[in-house]
Image (cartoon, rainbow, N blue to C red; front, side, top):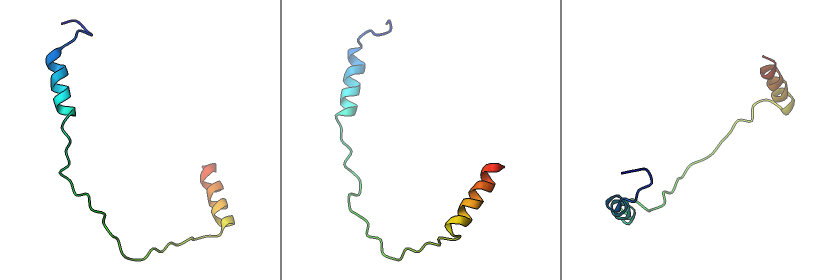
Length: 57
């Protein structure tokens, strides 16, 4: 078979594969409880100085 030739069996196989929807999964939303904390660390100037040091390496 040459490139670009129509293969009816392949077409039917792909249609059958794409025609099946797998709905066997958990569709429930998970509820997370807890707290979120973050550490801002240095001041803006300190972070800019650190960035300049990293960039100059």
